[in-house]
Amino acid sequence: LALAPTNAKGLVEYSADFKLLVPSANIATDVLYYNVNNRGGSRVPPEAGLDHPLSKLGYTYLVTGWINEISAGPERLRLHSPIVKNAGAAITANVRYEVTVGSPSFTENIAGSGHLAYTPTREGLAGARLTKRLYQHDARELISRDEFELQVTPQKDANQPLVELMLKEGFEPGLIYELIYEAQDPVLSGAGMTAIRDLVSLIRFGGQSDTQLTQLALPSINHTAAWGISQSGRLLRQFVHEGFNADLEGRRVFDGVIPVIAGAGYGMFNIRFAMPTRTNGQHSNHLYPNDYFPFTYGESVDPFSGRSDGVLKRSIASGTEPKIMHIQTSNEYWVRGGSLPHTNPEGTEDAVLPSGVRFYTLGGSQHGSGSGLPRPASSGQLAPNPNRWSPLSESLMAAMVRWIAEGAEPPPSRYPRIADGSLVASHNGQEINHDAWNPLPGINHPTAIYQPGVADYGMRWASERIIDTHPQAARGYYNPLVPAVNLDNNDSAETTVLSPLTQVPLATFVPWNLRAVATGAPLSLARLSGGYIPLPANAVAAAQSSDARRSLDELYRDFDDYLTQYEKATDKLIAEGYLLAGFKRDYMNIAAQNAALFDE
Image (cartoon, rainbow, N blue to C red):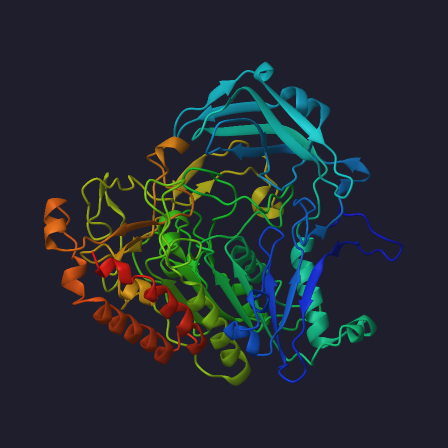
């Protein structure tokens, strides 16, 4: 911030696009929901249709741009942040980009589709270093400089360029390509969080821009909550951890915060040469500073540094801590270190949740909510997991409002724990732990899960958030765990929040998937994907395939019995407070389409 350009008043100037949905006066409440957009795109509940259950609750919805590196596009909300310099001179440093592909190609955007990178210096272009390897721990193979080119295309509406990597021999699916070059002109990336803080504070408390606010015809706002999915949920964890929930007057910005499918992570949101879109995984984006201590909301101790910290530590000290609902699927446990926010870093004991924190694990799910109906396999060896979990997470948005505005207790936390045996190791040595997965004939299972590593970023990282070391090496790994499964390999309704699709199953809803052979690296987890394995129709089919899972005939007398059990499970979720009644029809419509399975 000290190196950013200032105006005549000594202030740093930046701007952010925004979107605001204001309810009709006859239903408007005093609640503002801030939605953290994901890579520039967003859709708040009323945009799904006025019949959406949340559309009728009278919330005002706000979305702002917070990422500078995304390229312009229709309805993409962006941050427009300045380049920082050192006394007018360009700041330079090495940067690292990983590239993986699922199909053969010759040219790739190093920052990912729709994203911009950092400008290479002249020396950086000449001395760029490219390596390849198949798996994370394989030795890097150097690619000769004359075998690849970097095409840098300035953008007329952005201060970062498009940088494309062209490889003469072509990109091979599954290989990890790692590019390191000297870059210049970092942007003030942390302005994304100050933009969120300051605009929400202005709307809530008023300020120097009251005249402009009047033009927006907003209802009076007395309660605020923030909601973010995946990358956006990681942003919210970092927003709170770094103290941004206190505005410039020391007032609480958000009363409630809901990180959804964020796993254990933060992000490269507030560092020099930030890359906000990078998300660490088992097979891609390794050792970026995204998943680091502290993981828990209350304080815990880092076994590597001995340091004590928690996501809420700063906000508790300033009296600005928000209520927290941490919502994640069982997929995050396999691919994003999802157990670490509710255990110690060693994975040996459960963490104590602060009184203002609720934790909800949506069992039998992959990272993204599905339609409820199966689809063919594509990027994974199994068909993707179709579980429709979004009605559960969106219902909890309403529970958060009742919590912060009325003091009504939300549904109790429901997540797997070490103490009762519902949270277990994924593997025993090199072998799969049968508490985490019962092997099935013809089905490959993971040989390992994603583990956040402790990396060496150089001498200036701890104090200045500047990375000097490329590539990084891990000096240790944290120990994530996974939910235990039943004999059908499904999650438990006692220790996870299960949709009716998974409570009354027609299949095993697998929280992981392996990369398809055609996409390369078939021993690695498919990025953020789950799997779907139909249950055998009857005992004969089960015996023929040596399938130890229960058959449909064992679970249900007929379709009517299935439908009765399914509706009972749906009604129970409503009674427990995990599901709004308005979503029942959505779930029942999905079940009605399964009648043909009982005619076979």
